[in-house]
Image 1 (cartoon, rainbow, N blue to C red):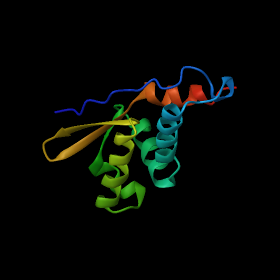
Image 2: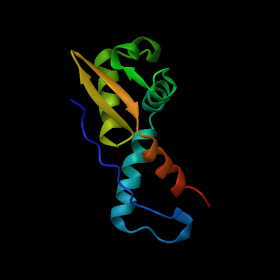
Image 3: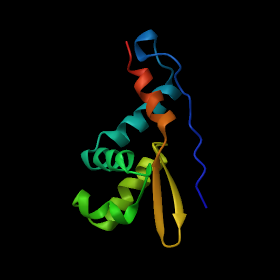
Image 4: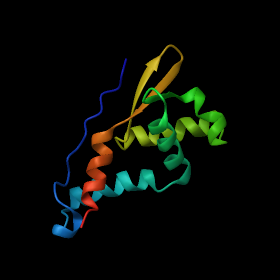
Length: 111
């Protein structure tokens, strides 16, 4: 069963367009914090580059050079930040990028 992710459209305009309110700043900081870790950024890129648009957690352990529990922890943080979705299939979890979430983060950084 796939976990439902609500993509939050916190800011519709770039951060240079005006002062962020507290809620928007908190939401953006949370998402950027998830991306600020090199291991998570690599895992996100591995999922994004996967041939079918999704990757099994089991296939991310070896190329990441991290242990399975560490990979699972980082993937869970990316899911919590709304950057990935997770679908459990049998004993494995499959991950996909949430393109709208990445686009929203990109949009707020535009001048």
